[in-house]
Length: 386
Length: 93
Image (cartoon, rainbow over all chains, first blue to last red; front, side, top):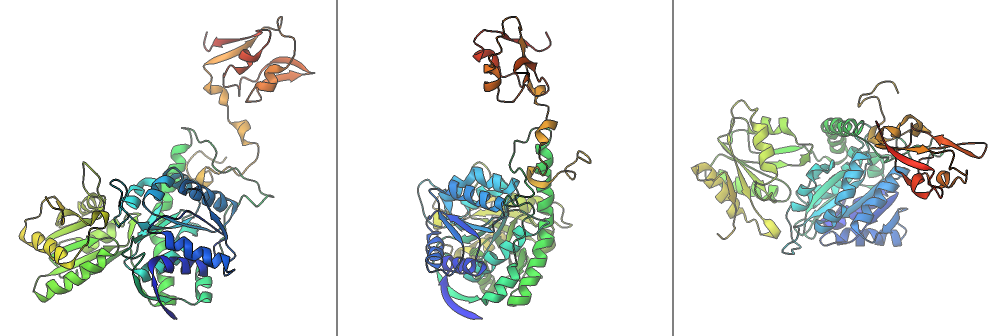
């Protein structure tokens, strides 16, 4: 295996180079820019056969991907923040037309005030668009997920677009060691894209994206419900297959030191790594601390969460996004899931790291300490000056 | 179509057969229907040119009425008729 020192964006571009998608349509936006810059180099140097379209906007980029995917092309794109927001309308179309597009989202705050740094408000806002959502913790995971996303999206039982989140700057721009898989192994792993009804199959013409009235719209939405229900099983198989070629094991919910833990903190993305560091330090101090990384947010892995958190004394759900007038987006899902647990823990919410606010282990340890002392509010705001 | 559940149709609103629009009776959307006064009609077929739903019945180059199964009652035919030979009448009256 090749060891490389690269940032997360370059890792995504490298993964795409190995996958060699038929079409990439994108528009550059910080902190995703390096992905499309690096990939356009591969195109210019003839290292891929990809039809690379530099779109005039993200709305167009997504529209191009939908059209190309409908035609039967394997498609990838990437965006962040305002770019994802500009795609909004087409995100829903991609999901409902069942075009298995793969998109990397370099998670960045939404304006305003304008800010280019990491939080999850962009992709969390796209929660209901019908896309599968998975998030990486570091450069290696960003690369691995970029490959696995094609397999999940294009599986005949799924046929849904997949969004892979990587924390803006923290993962997109930080250089880490990457263990890239050999080209032939990647090629074999992702396989050929076999579209069900490609528009370019002119002998079997189909109509895609027609008007759908009250008599069928609901049934087509229900088909999306069922496709989402099939995602966990397909994902498990993809994770199994990926472990065989890489030695790296993934799960939709990844617990760390939770077996005997009293207090558990859970997070999405790079913060999950910081949690583990904090857990190690607190364990050395004698606290029964544990952490959970939520790798998959859509579909929401309710059962796996119950399994890990059942019987704990208290759980803090970290949210790097906020729904004004309510809580963070992950918190209510976890608490709702835990209603069905045998022994429901106290579940509280910590909003943190908005606009790229640093997340030092000391602050995380503070969350654990508040959790243990029972001082946590229902919804807490970590590190904000009040 | 075998049945009318979510499991009976292709996913994603896909239509895999040609000519399916014939099965869609858009005439049910209509609130006003066009009625022809054959006395005034000069068979210029302007209505046929403008009809967005191919709902003007033509026989031997003569205007013979409307396909009410598909006519949505948009009223364009009445608007463009140079002889005011088409009247839009409230449905149910």
